Length: 66
Image (cartoon, rainbow, N blue to C red; front, side, top):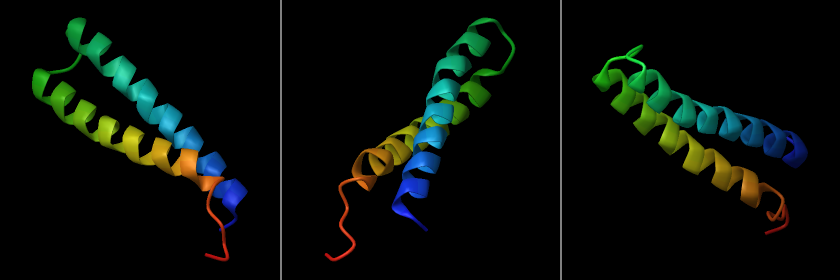
């Protein structure tokens, strides 16, 4: 997989997970989702955000020779 493609995909998925992290509290406040769903979703979206954002940030710094 090319470095450019990996960076694009990981960046897009990081933004999606950040959007989920921002939407879940609003949905919970409005009473659209249960507290358990909010907590589980927020946990998973937060983990995805930190992993994918790290991959996105470091994808351009990796060297194929090392």
